[in-house]
Image (cartoon, rainbow, N blue to C red; front, side, top):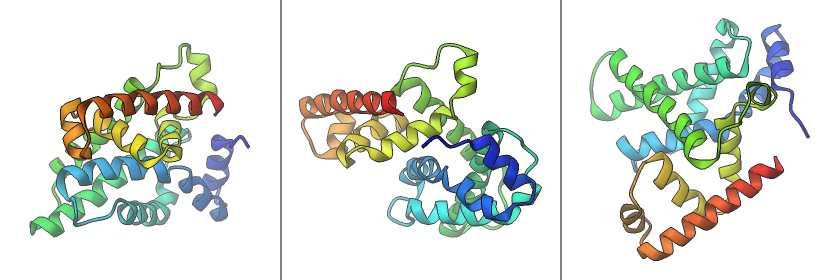
Length: 200
């Protein structure tokens, strides 16, 4: 079933509150993936990515009437900013700092932008023409959804290698596997991801 995101977005912006939840839900895997990478760097073991996404959704739902964008790209950018604010609040709570740190929120937002670009750049070849890009949904969101469909070890090797930027030896240590098995797992995972994306 093809989702017309732009139509759903227009209906939600026109005041149909019943459309906001389904619209935001389209980005659950994407935001979860971004949160997981950032939590892994800063808050591992203290916070669960799904809890961070839930807090982000509540904030987005509450402030949706203020959203001024008209495209999926603008919505994704807005959601990343809310996610950055949510994680910044968690960091303040766990690190015991006071007050809002705009610099930290900007740093987190930049990290999310880089993670999104890494999804598009490293995992699949970019869509070739602007017209093809216009008819496709936000590629990083599609990739996050496709990653969620993969077996856990496939997803893990791709996230560690491409989003966290670890070398193969570092990935092998993190996963408790041999270097050879990680490299083979990575090749199979990439193949499965590309196959899944071909079916999307």
